Image 1 (cartoon, rainbow, N blue to C red):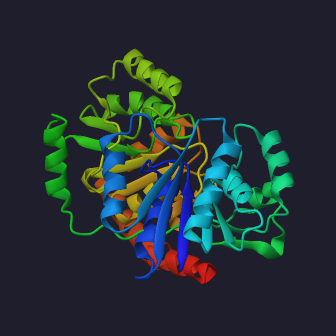
Image 2: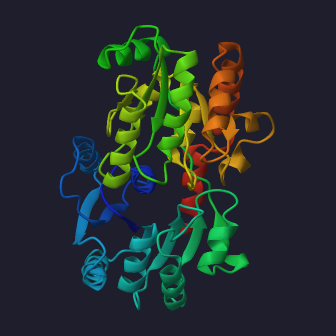
Length: 373
C-alpha cells in the first residue's frame, strides 16, 4: 500500500500532525509520503526538527513549492507526476488548498481519495469562492471525513450527501512520564519567574482565529487579584503578523510586558502543558484541536470556548470548563473560580478519563485504516 498525505506545509500544526501521526502508525511495508503544498521560507527550528524526525522514521517528505495564493494548476501538475511516479494507492488530503490541488491532480487516476475536514467553519476567508470550488470539484469522487462530532455545518456547506458523511474524531496519545513539579521548576527557571508563580498557558499560533486578546483582556483584571500569575503563550508569531502586532500592542498598553510571555513555537509543548496551573484556549472557531485533546490528557485544568465541537465534548459537569468566545468577563469568572485548587483537580481527572475512553489515537487510527484498505 502506498499512501500520500497532502498538507499545507511542514509546520507542526494540527492538521499536519494528524497526517504525520497516521503515517507513523501505518503497517511495516507500506510506502509513506508526506507532501506539502507550500514551502515555508524561513522555517523555525521546530519545523526543521519535525521534518527530520519524519525522515528518520522512514517517511518521505516532498514539497510542491507552490507560491502562496497562486500557481494552483502548476502545483496540481507536479502532484500528478508524483502520484503516477509512486503509483499512489491512497491520496489523503487535509484542509482546503490541498483538497483543491489533490482532486485536480488525481482526475482520471485509479486512486482512492480521502479528505479530512479539520474545521467546522470551512472557507472562512472566502465562502463564495468556496461554494464555487466545491460545486466544480464535486463530481470527483472523494471520501469526506469530519475530524469531530457535530460537523453538519461543514458537510452542508461542502454539499456532502448525508449517507456519505463520516466522522472520525481526532485522537491523541496520553501524556505520560512527566512530573508536574519538575516541569514547573524548569519553566519558572527558563522564564525567570518566581518559583511559586501561577502559569496560565495557551497553545496556538497568534492569529485572529485563536482569540488570544480575550485571554489578555481577562488577565488584565485577573492579575489584580492574583499578582503572582503569568500568561505563557506558545505558538507562531509569523502566521498572522498583523494580529500578532495588535496582541503585542495590547500587552504593552495594559503594562503586562513582564507578565505575558510570547515564547513562539516550542518543541516541548507537553512539558509546558504539564507545568501549567491552567491551560486556556480562547479560539473563535476550531475543528477538533489536537492541542486541546493533549491538554485534556495532561492532568492540567483546561478552559476553552463553547464553540463546536467543544460543546459536544465538554458535556454534563465538564460544561463548567466552557466560556463564550470573545467574552473576557466570563473567562475571568472561570479563572477566579478555578483559582481554588480544590475545584481544579477533580475536573482534570475527569478530562484524562474522557481522552482515554473516547479520543485516543488508536481509536482514530483504526477508523482511518478501515478507509485506506
